[in-house]
Image (cartoon, rainbow, N blue to C red; front, side):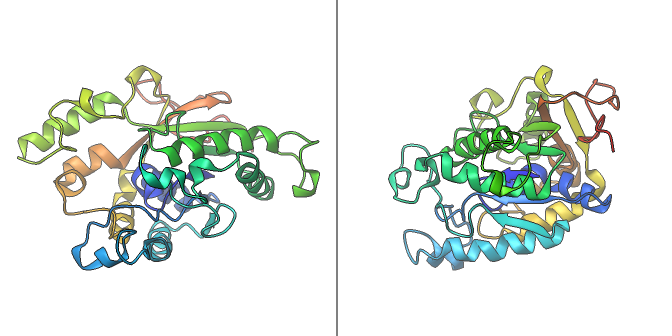
Length: 288
């Protein structure tokens, strides 16, 4: 199970992982917390969808996410509480943070209850979400982290909302991450090709990236990179696949996105590790 804040987050962070596990016969459940109503529309002819103009982006992104999931092979996707229950909160410090339905403002009790119901229904062996900073500080990512972690706790408590189903303790919980060494190599390749890497000259300027020492798992999904790139194209309002970072070259694509990285924060690491001592399989060590 993966808990993400907006449509497209799942593809950027976990697309190759999701496609790999679907192909291997794993039941993959994606939970998206908002419709991403305040995302920046990158396609000029679709600017009318934006919150500043037609305010129709959220509904449009439902279709983009459905198309992306189809490319990845994911058939079990849910919007937390139903489509539009909570809205995109915008970037930190912006007006949408204070919207009446902003996910960032939601009392944790309601979204937690909704997610517990899904956890107890699906009974996942692995949960993937963001770290406590939401990866890069977006309020909805931070809130998704809080909800996911609290729901994992509550789902395991037999006396919590028994009408939602029997208790289930998720064996392993991971947080998405990107090692700084990967960012540094990506920056080098992009600059060599004359491209722009998030508008920075040094990875120290980026709001994301973790020390390599805290990365505990690396899922090799390079064989599933075509599916991930197709899913990125499905998120056409948000991702410029022809841009230098996403589609500079096959080499950069495989380096930056074919292998996806994780940090195990609950549960025991399994015995299957790579040359760096990182798990190669998120299900490693889970019986059955």
